[in-house]
Image (cartoon, rainbow, N blue to C red; front, side, top):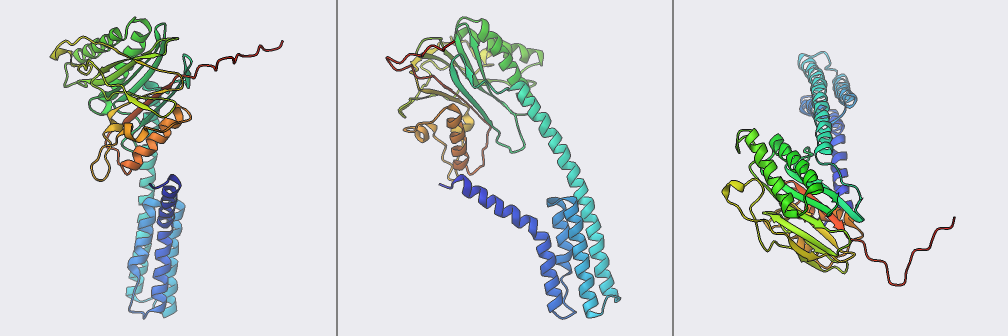
Length: 378
């Protein structure tokens, strides 16, 4: 398995080669012209150098590359005493014009990069507003969340997660909205907003799911139907009651959570009573029923979207988180998600086809028998 440092070194070597390529072309062209008869010319190399520098290097480096190419051409022409010949003048003018055009291209590329950076900042601000990072500790539990976009320049899509402490316990949701773009982002905002309100006031996890169903239906009606709004959302909701070593799971067409025990054992938590995704209530009514499972101290509950389980390698094989995580232990939820994200990117060769949202919650270990906290001295 390729390691992270090895991959970083390869990327560093590739970047160094790209940055040195324009000047390397100038040097090769100068050597070729200097050591070959005068009827041989390296003009294509001198023309290519500033054009390659334009989209890849800074404006200063592009200007210097053009000046270097022009200077080498003049030196070679003077060396052969042909600087005033028509063909030599044509070659010199060609390199000069191309160098000027390369600077213009560099300016245009720089403006495009500036607009892209602005768009990225806006997307990141939208992500922080719609999908804020949960606190590292909520209700006494360690929490970690991670969002991995399939596209390098995308920051937010249709995957979502949220954690809410409530009078009934710590409640969580992880979901995946059908579709992409601003419609998916709007649906994410609706689901998270409805979840936070319902998690605080509804007495059962089933009632929370119904509130989410009604919120999506209401928003779909307001936007003139399913074609104007994202049609459905797969989701898994979890509730960890205060003081009880259990977790309740309600699944709406979503990949099942995984329970990682402190000793490395792993247990999937599939739904005993599967239900349709949120937003598909018009197809029929299925009563929501939450399943209950033990959640002992030191264990971690992992919720994820199908961007994890549907990541494929070069042979088309899906990533299997149960198999990859079984028998392993982790220092905390944050370490688990970092290792998991790196592993799935290695499995897919860095080619994720869908966004991936991860949420991990660890129950602290109970204090050892006979160990009590010492009172603080005044």
